[in-house]
Image (cartoon, rainbow, N blue to C red; front, side, top):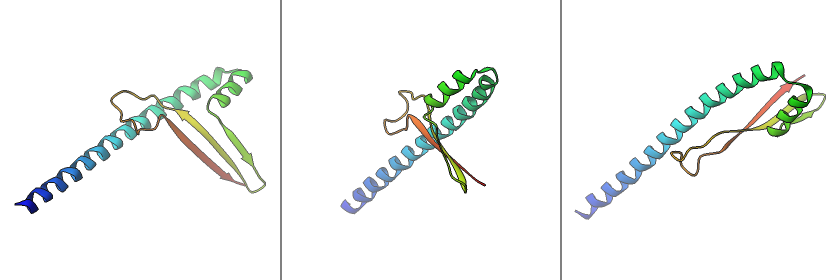
Length: 102
């Protein structure tokens, strides 16, 4: 009987872990949608932005560009909104990194 209780408890913990993983995946999917919307809005706003506006945007996003003769690294942070429904371990920003080669 004790073995059955231990197995049930282990199964319960495993199920809770799966449920947390499912919630994290759902949050990431929502963040992906928000990121796509954010990029679309940013593209539209950039068309009308002045040079100073564009500099302010780069500063806000903490954009870092490193150029070498071989490649260019672009790194930045995109703020994501968090809600109380999201777990406390959900990221509040998304680190993005891009790289091009010459």
